[in-house]
Amino acid sequence: MSEFHELIKNFSKTREYVRDFFVYGFKTRNEFNEKSPRTYDNERRRLECWLSPYVRRDHTSDGSNISLAIDSNLLDTNPLFQVWKTKSFTDNDIVLHFLILNLLQDDKNRTADEITDALLTGYDVLFDTQTVRRKCNAYVKEGLLDKKKEGKKVSFSLDRSVALWIRSNESILDALDFYQLAGNFGIVGNVLTEQFDHHNQTFRVKHSFFVHSLEDEILSALLEAINQKKSVRLEMKSSRQKKMNQTICIPLQIFTSTRSGRRFLCSYVQRNKRFTCFRLDAVKRVTAMEPVIRYDELYDKLLQNRRHLWGVSFQSTAGHRLDRLKMTVQIMEPAENYILNRLRYEGRGGTITKTGENIYQYETEVFDCNEMLPWIRTFTGRILSLECTARSVEKRFYQDLQTMYHMYLPETAYNGPDKRQPGKEQD
Image (tube, rainbow, N blue to C red; front, side):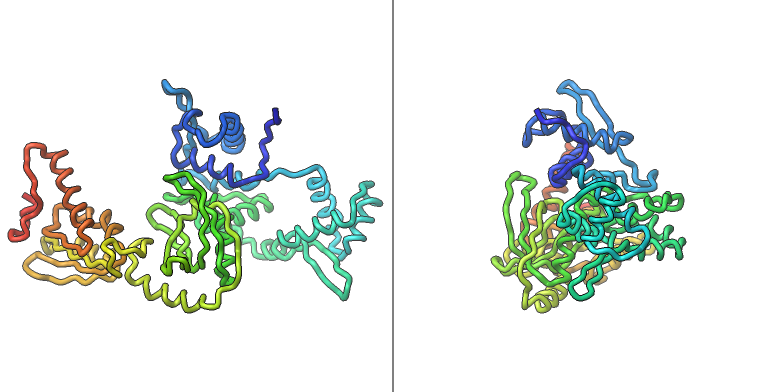
């Protein structure tokens, strides 16, 4: 039987368990049926080691289950950053890490051969030159070392640029405190503040979406591909069918929901010849491919289409290019002028026309009117009529109203609003 280790090699598997415990939670051991019970036990133990102050255990008739209880407005940092700091390492990794960084504290440039010799004479440890060179090149990519080439000679030195900049501008620590809570890749701000033994005493975020920091590795690969204007191969797992599938697409933009914090990749799929959005939490791996010649042309086309985008769907419900929706609402002026302001500020470019006393008509064209329904429902009680070229959207809206009437007024028959009599829906 393999020994349990708190540190991990493969982050993707652990990411799924942390997300399950944080977003869904309240699952018993038997409900994690995609992996073996031993795998569940190992991941649960890791979670309890990393995030013990936030682990909640409940006991039910079906067994015990755990979940993560994290209140963002009480915390000075994102506890899930700890998950990024648990990568496993070999004995040689940890020895070379400390010895190389300690050796280069004198800020001298040394080649891989010189570093190898100095490790032997100064610390009495022998390493292969190739091993030392690979480790130094890896630290150059990580930003720990600086690489300098003079002819055929390649030398390494400690990169102090970030540390010197922060020490000379200590006020930047406040910016890092804010960034680790508010920005993508907040782990960067967290690591930098920890290196200077600095703790956030200034900022708290009332509504923060901590769980989405688990996708930053995927986000980084996508942003790099966007910057290089390359297509990518996405390996994704369907949340419904639990199956893995692959898609080749051209990444164009990242969309972020202000309501849920969920992030989407907006891309162009050449096979379907259409724009498509993919949830980042469904993407497991990103592989960069060849540069795209038409990239700028597709990006400009996306900007034009975004004017008719309500959420993240580019697919019309009824098969048309765009769905047209018309909503007539009753707004008692001037007491309910705030409702009129909502239509203006939240209507995303829709037209507003006054058709009568206290009667307004809102009209818009979008790709998928289904995405509008949650917003439309917030005007329930003021809606006199709703018409949509996507009949399924119109039907769904009135069915939802009928269901609500049956729930709260079971004795009252409801057949939909009478369009000839404004205000009938409110009776």
